[in-house]
Image (cartoon, rainbow, N blue to C red; front, side, top):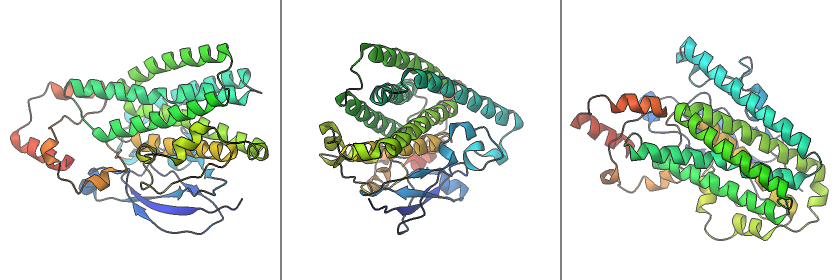
Length: 359
């Protein structure tokens, strides 16, 4: 199978987002697109370039660099993921807090990986079923906390809700694919996956409420492991997978109907830039693996507060929705939200300025 990759050039609003996917082969076309940055770009005037891969239907391999390696997150000697966001302006205390958060996340992730390695060494589909049951949980947790913030009038960001729902929708279809392949055949696997998911949900809700940055980094670790797991499986079983037919649910999700939600979770690429073909089981796992890389890039971007924006938001900018935007307290975490809610109410000028900024 021929490898054909096109790198896309993106402008990102924070220097910590340096995820890069590259390949030595293929032709290169340049595309400017800025889906991850927020309106804060106008205030800072700074642009940081990131090179990502636009996936093509005949793509065979994506090389994910150290940004997606969990054990490098705390390594300050390496560029990219090992550096905390906005490190130059962070206080010493904040840098140590970030180190502690990331070290804790890496420890938790490695502990779960060791358990899965022991239980599912020779049962790939069952392992994938457990992984996908767990992987969609954080997005439900994020949405739950965001709805709580909305209920108290603390923070309202439609893009976060849209993107996280699209991510959960993507992970749900990964789960449906594994169920069709028989990954949930054993009662024990269902029991283990469901109970881990419940514990993970409760833990993520508390983590996200206290430190969204830590919760997003933890999800990046999980998605990184998922990418590596699928990549290893494809390399080992690729020839056999090419001989097997794809599950119907995979064909329907990737190639049929309204693909709005499929584009929505891929925040580092323009809508409709990725339209894979599913001819066999190899294609299915190739696209699942690349989905995990997209999740990882989004989770990396989310670690800078207010940095996430829906890929479709730029198409909607042409529509005047300023009348629908309500004033809000821009806060990060429940402690910050409570502090700002106790302050004096904003003036009419501040409310008007915030509404124009959000529009």
